[in-house]
Image (cartoon, rainbow, N blue to C red; front, side, top):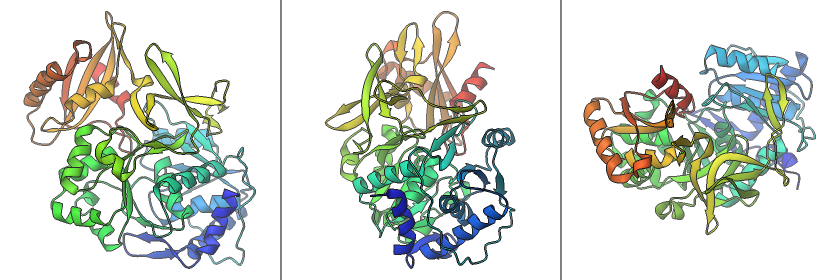
Length: 472
């Protein structure tokens, strides 16, 4: 079956079905989005964009950025989403690297008049870039991860099959569309299945106070959260009964993009009565595993591996086995050009995460790139972070390593404290907790409390900036 052609057919077979609902109640069918995408593709063609050329789309969440994804799909163009919340330097870096033939933004006027043409998608091959996602810059400058449409569609098809995402799915969308999860997980997945995207406002201080109204009104059935969003909902929920009522109709509450600490997992279930289904994936390798609702109640892994994922485990250091995956992406787009990732003899690339399979389920045991080596001993930041995650007044935890003349690196535990919390009391509690729960080699050399962590627009903690601030 040609999955790329199947996505094109989806717009025809589901023409009268509701594809998109916005927070203000506007509704768009598959046919309407298709016709608008065709008009956008024509707009690009009239400005000299040819199949294979790149279009940089710098837009916040909304109907237009979603339409541009599919305009590029039908027009044969390469979509380069640019998050407008990035720093000016990072946005300029992306534009410089991508060298787009056309750039569009919030103020771009597009001739979206109805078109008599209903284009078929071009022959998207496995080796032809369709979308270039730039990473959030958690560790360095954003770099472009190049994916073909065939790979993206194949990945969500396998995910949909595993999780029973279907035509009656109503996916609540609150993630940034300019990033992988904000398109792959929460747009392409339901669209491939013929479902509906319920587009809420980007999650933030304003939207979280009334978070549950939209999913209740629009009968949302599925949602993707990040751990930081789940934690914020716990802190901000003014009426647990409303949240429980809204979530009662959900089939899935997926959680991904960052490690899910045990305390958050337990607190969310207790408060809202629905489990967080942890998933695992990377920008390069897409979705690799996901928990079922039943497993998420009792297990602390990241779920069963998708049947399309080619996983293996290679000992990179004594006692540490890295997860390696059959390469999904076409390479990185960098300032130096296209860099193809190195693979082993079987075409697999490393994920940078350590893990193991237990009864067919994937467990993440640490991140190799984040390992702290103190006095020759490998320390997993995740293991240290879990020791502090349930301390009263601690909103989030990040453990980093800092250079040290004698030890090589020292362990620094950073605690993000809730407003009104006495930081000295929290540090004292954490110091006591470290002695109780951690082996001596894993106990932090420093514990630092602060009101807020530096975060990327995806909500991920920017440990690079944490290190710079602590070292400064």
